[in-house]
Length: 430
Length: 163
Ligand code: SF4
Image 1: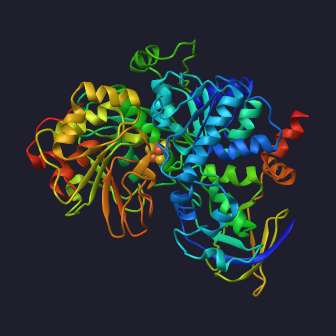
Image 2 (image 1 turned 180 degrees about the vertical axis):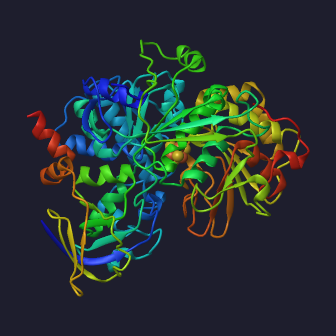
Image 3 (image 1 turned 135 degrees about the horizontal axis):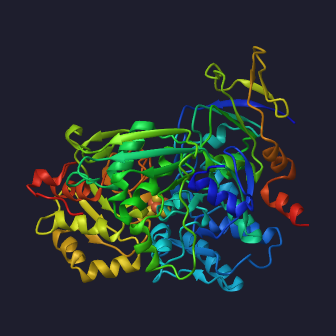
């Protein structure tokens, strides 16, 4: 029986030859992740139900990243719960502040996620790791507690939607157009519940030509379309990335030719322009040239969506030698320590600071209105993040516009949402 | 199981930042979360809820983050059931995992007004407006979810399984 990559990974981990969409299964997990927001509840549950050892000390990952370095006493207590639990249970993959970073960049970078894995994380953007050809999905704290105890989780096998992206220039996108624009455009087309409960499989020459950071960005935002998981079938780009990091054997799966899809969407992205998602839903997308005049107070480059080194390079290429508009606060946050070090080496930090931006150590920070850049009533931000819900970055009357790092950097200079082309910069950085 | 309570009606795409804004996630104290339940759309919601009340909403209820604080806040404030056109998937599993029942209704439920007293039979999926006697039928709750509810959530369920 022919299956999709998602069905194959689920079947393997459930010990079955075959699974059908809609079927409920209990499956073994290769990794269970929690953070400073979700893990304390899971740990509490684990203890209340007399949990002794975690199912595997190498397969539980705890990352304090949301409110770290501890922003207040309450968050300090939450982080302490993680730290104490990690010590007590001998959890090997606990990342202390100096080593930590945003979980969804940190795990791939640390070689903890591999093709063919089944990964759950008590964080909705756990779907990011589908970019390496894994089945990876966000769950809640109780799921994490149960998985820490038993090494298992329950799933309803999702139907799969296939997305095929073409461009007539061998999969290349226009200047200043990236994975972020592909996924924003897609969500604009299908809506925030367009893939509810479904797997989203990304294919086509645009994906083939895309680097890993672009693929991570795309898979990161499947949850913004309601999706259960996003997945890219591994190719040489994947293996080049994974083989430098993963130190264990893994299995590469692909979808069978005759695999069944709930739907197939094909898009010609040859002329795709940078996309901007207007408040308060990621589906409210417009082309950059249809934005009109939107003055901004804050420009933020960072998060698990666009805090990769490639994103910082793009933003730096726009900002270098220019000044952040006097009406704008620009905040740049690399997703991990390694990215931070790389940015330092390449002189990117210098470029940002010189231009008048602030550059922080890794944290989720402003992405969820936590700290490091919270918005006041009536303020507007343009951000490389993934959610522009009401109040996401601060007060309920503030607004968030989502865009790629080139647009955010150009907007920081312009004082309103705009593109690098308006600054007379030619040729996009890949 | 029969649930009786007044309806609190909301629209489509009620996300987790609305149900419990992220700034309150630095704690999971249930009483504290209850005070901020639905604060993103209705301040002082907790003052308007009587224990046992029911939320009635449109499509994609609970979209956004995986925070279990969302169903916890609703339960803690006294909500006994959420009825919606559809649910976001992580919210769906979180709710059943902690023992908060959800009902999906494909019929038009827009005519249910806030404050309307409802009587819901979870086993049959029948929702009755007590003032008009109008009845709506929800999709049946999958067997596994019923088992989770009757066990009192996933952890109790797993404990039983392991034993
Ligand atoms: S960066 Fe934002 S979206 Fe990503 S894990 Fe952190 S809070 Fe969530």
